[in-house]
Length: 457
Image 1 (cartoon, rainbow, N blue to C red):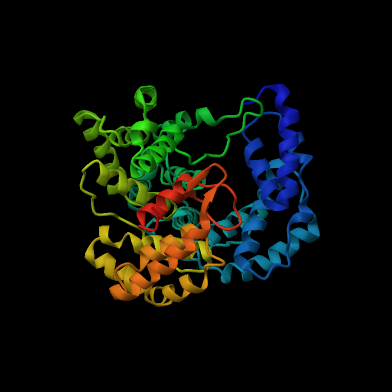
Image 2: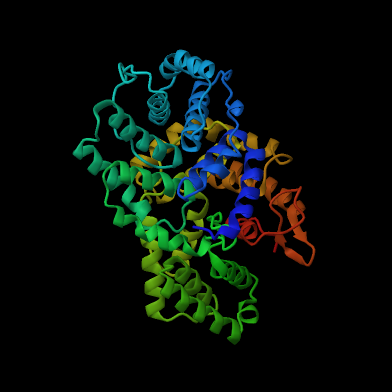
């Protein structure tokens, strides 16, 4: 709860977010202010029901925005114009028939409950099965499946609730490296499945250091993994350049040890692993710390991995290998459709992790992405002007075992030549830029280049 002096700051932030996202900005403001007493007047100042677009062809988006704005009106106690309310009641049944995702069905039923015209909106809607969870979208559908069941039957069946709690427990037990939306929906699933609210208390503690003192709002999670992650990248790159002793002098090593101890006190076990692998670059890690870090990395890699984590899994694998640990079999997500560039990048990343996946799942992933694998060499050769360096490297790793060696070597030669153009920036001749439009180098980008053997030594 912010101090009374923070109201002006809250008002300013609310104005900014609503200006940027008229519908979702209002919803975010409403969901934030609902927990603060005497905030309704402030909320009303930012409510504009005309932002609700009723002419959208996409029924899933139509339902999402309508449900959001109806919740805004309800929380702000703003009446809905009779004509607009009737149009929603007339159009909602058709829209419900056009969606199949459990989350969209859930939001449609939420909207119907707010409109409350006395009819049974659940007629003809079947309770969806409990889905497997491997990314934010499937987590939303898990919540949606329970939400629909609650609307249709009045409660979630105990067996389904137990299954749902089991699916989200890994996220709630170790949320540090996951994005807020994924953790947020996991929490909603937990509550919908009658989970003990005490199990969520750890999330509050982990979020405490991200509360803005001025506004009382939660700052966005920054995936920098703290100074120890950056120090590890510097140390690894220095070791590669045979300069680790120079970079990691006695004072830096002592600072790393202090950070490790502080990370232990915070319960930040992944930071401890970064610190241990940093000291490893100068052979200054004892057996106890090595074992502690290896156990942490194995535990991180042994659990279910979500799409949002694929981007960082390679680093955890690399660290564990450096520490001399055996990489466990990875429980990666099921293959997913490729609809845009980000999907394609994540699919390439998933394909690159196949050596660490069970044989049956390897084959399933390979077969699902057969067309993408066939197209990848041409995409890489034709896309040098368009691809970012991380996309190029993910594509190269994805097809490492799917081309004849001569063809793969030729592709590496092309990629090797192209990365020359991305090498160097002001003050750093050996580091790499993520793309042609960026002037600053990146440690993680450089580490990716080295991992794929494309550095120009």
